[in-house]
Length: 159
Length: 333
View 1: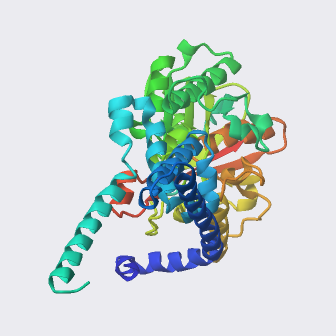
View 2 (view 1 turned 180 degrees about the horizontal axis):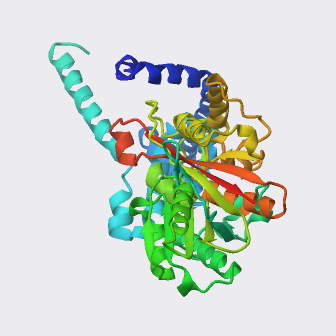
View 3 (view 1 turned 45 degrees about the vertical axis):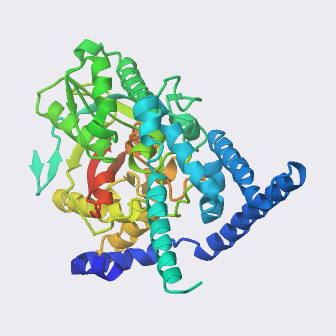
């Protein structure tokens, strides 16, 4: 990818980009990974606690308890987005808040809030899936191919 | 009058009779808060959309500039303005309110100096007695159009910049007392193949350097002629690159006179990553901060090099690189 990109550049452009690269601050990748691990991990632990809570106090069967737990995380994430806290959390935690279900809820809620000024139909309805739409599309496509592969393996006498 | 390849020298020295700068709440927390005429506490300015809020900012800036100069709105011949919104709606809607014959310009963040150089040219040619020029940007409106929703929790890299919520306007005349516009160098597009919209500083720095070099070559003067040379919104990343590039090209601008509007507008404690950006950045800092310092006699000759990244969200998604431009205007008192 990067090689393909570089091929199109003229020597002057290439020279400048190498020159500018040395003077540009890098993304703090290690720090970002560490924070993402801590925050993402904490969210997952919190989700597990919620699950345990629903099993213990609301007598949910074990395999269904993740549904209300996920719903609580989604509601919290949307509330945090609405109160204007989530974007600051996201800047600090990066992938930590983006990868769990909280990130997905945030993409939908933030787009809905942002486009409220264009009305409910063209604004909120039309733009709500602006960021999350591709997650749904590629999530479904990936699930389809995984299902096909599983079926083939089974048909061949696999697991 | 044309001098060199692309510099206009204004013989009649159009005068900036009055100027105004309007800012939002975040700008009010910055070190230049004192230099704004109006600072709004509400980022929406009581409007029901951020686009309307931006229009309000520009309207206010123009009206205050016209009022300060004690000129009647009907006597102003032309209004030249630009902003970042699609189809420059903030400028056009402001022109609707003002009712002044209008020329809309688009130079992205360089619109402020594009407007000022054209306004000066019109005055200098005798085609107008009074021209008002302005530029505006709004943080939420710009983020919404160019990047992600403001409440989206994506992580921004350290090279990204913070779009200024603000508008600046200046009223120019062929007579009167005030800072004079003496020359303008029109930029050409410089594209170094950078395509990351979160790294505007490195994309725009070569354009600024190109225009600065052209300015000094055309006028055959030395950087020490100016008390201050300020780029528009390169931020800390672009400013550093521009400085190093100028040294590499053999032009030594003393660091104490070389600055950037995007570095001045916000304090170190404000979370703006590499610095401020947007049309409102160079417009408010020039028309508010720099012109105040000139009127107080602190600065005598300044050169403002407003930089603009001429991409769109569409061009970036289609993997186009970012074409950049810079226009330089010299103001003397």
